[in-house]
Structure formats: structure tokens, C-alpha cells
Amino acid sequence: MKMRAGLLIGLFSVLLGGCKVTVSESYDVSADPHTFTPGLYLDARDTGEYFPASSWNLSQHSDDCIDETLYFETDSGRVRIYGSPAFSDIDFRAAATELEHSIDSVLSRFQLRWWEFVADRSAAAPYPRQILGCLSPTVSRTEFADASISAIGILPHYSQWPYDTGRIITHQLTHFVQENLSRYHSRYSLLPYWFAEGQASVVAGENEASAYQHYDYDPLEDATLLDAGPEDYRFSHYALAYRYLEEANGKLAMTILLDLIQLLDWEGGFDGFTGTGETWAFVEAFNAAGLVDHLNQPLTWQRYKADYHYLLSHSY
Image 1 (cartoon, one colour):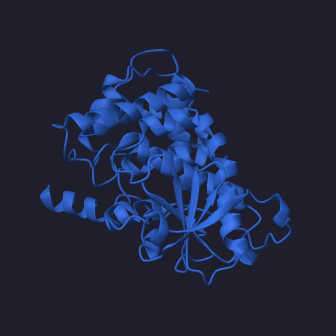
Image 2 (cartoon, one colour; image 1 turned 30 degrees about the horizontal axis):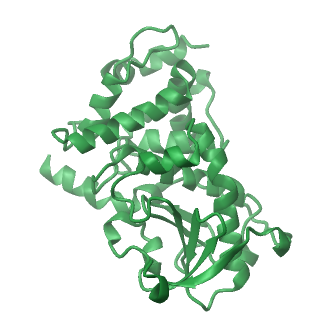
């Protein structure tokens, strides 16, 4: 178990990198710079607002900005984009605009407003009143963006951005919100891989498997990226498994579940992983959340995992 836990902790930096994000082959170069969110360029050497230096709470790409001092901050103060001065003004402004324009719609899916999210964010967040972005030269075009609890790494070359930029940013912002709501000081994600990807796929409006296709895959077996199979269609089944919970219980119940996980992380005593890879914090929070199935019958984690296919086959 210790070896498995070590592997899971080591996977934190790449967990969200396991996202299935299908990037279009076309570029979106039609944006009018005058529609970009206004803001100011600042330097951390003057403001003291340096990019986070703790790589454990960054993604494999957003830590590219650890040594960068230049950043663009929107007039609202909610978004900062750090990056090299070698990148263009449009690169900074476009990234800031995407995050600024997308965050409220993402939070609405969690039944939250901005100030509520700020109040609920993880204690690990270095700047709780801001969303940090990093123009990362190591992000490939096939990835485009990469989220962590502290920042979102974004492809800096605006002329190469895909047409479905908004969907990808929404997916990654969902991961950003998930991690900030479900962790207090944990140094690794407390959410099962299928849940994190399923919720992000649903919020971003990505492909979902139909309920009658549930036998094609066992999403609840994928507690971690290590457990996931090679099939691309597994992501649509993660979405199906998450959607079942949301439809039976409502969006707010899913946010409360994340809050309960964070509470258990804060209280302590629920460290480590079950024999099948889920964190104890997730399992205990799931069982304490008062969730129900599609017939309004009590639903524990153990029952959902054991009876998943039975429940789905009787839900349509």
C-alpha cells in the first residue's frame, strides 16, 4: 500500500495532464484585440507578487513561470497572467481574457459566485483572490492548457490557438475549481480520476456516453491515472458516471461533496488510500453527503461502485 500511495502522490503533477482534450485542427486568429479584457502590466520585482515557487502545487507546465516576474493583471483583479517578456502583448491579453470570461460560467455550474469561491478556496492557494495563468512554452498545441491547484498553464502563441479554445479553457478551469474546493492542505488530489475528468467533461459540454452504453466500460474502476485503460472513449463514460450523480442529486450537492472532502482534509485523520485506490477523504465524504440514486434511495460509495451497472441499466 505504501508503494501504491507513493506512486499516487507522484502522479499529482501529471494527474490532470491525463485529460482527454481533443484540439481542433483549425486556428482561431479572428479575435479583435479591442475586445480583450483591459488590464495593466506589472513586475513582481516592484509589487512583490511573485509567481508561486512551490512546484508541488503546480502542473508540469505552469511551473515554467516560477522565474518570470512580468505579469498582466485584469482590471477586475481576478486574473493574472505571468510569462516571458518575449511573448507578445496579444498572448498575455488573450489568455487573461479567456480566463476572465470563462470563470463565472464555470462557477455557476458549481452553484457559486466569485466571492464564495474565494472564501472556499484551498489554504494551499498562494493568491486566493486571483486565478493565475502561465504562458508556458512547454505546453504543446495538442494539450493547449494544463490546470493545477495554483495556476493554469496556457499555450502562449495566440496565432496557434484552436477554435475550441473556450471549451478547453472551461475543462481546465473546472479542474482548477475542483482542486481548490476539495483540498485544504493535501499535497495531492483527493478526487478519483474518473470523477475529476467526468465533472470537467460535463461542465465543458464534451461527449457523454449514453446510459444504455454503460456496459462498454467500468469508469469507477479508474481511481487513478494508473488504473485507466487505453480506450479514448473512457472519458465519455467518466462523464456518464458523474452525470448520474449530478442528475440524481443536483449541482449543489456535488459542490457540497467537494466541500466535505476539503473539510475532512482540514480535520485530518482521513489520509491515505483505500485498497482500490480512492482516497479515504473522498469515500468518507461521499458516504456523509446524503447522496441518493435515481429513485431517491440512499447511495453510499460502496453501493455505487458495486451496483453501478445495475443502477445505470434501470435509469432509462
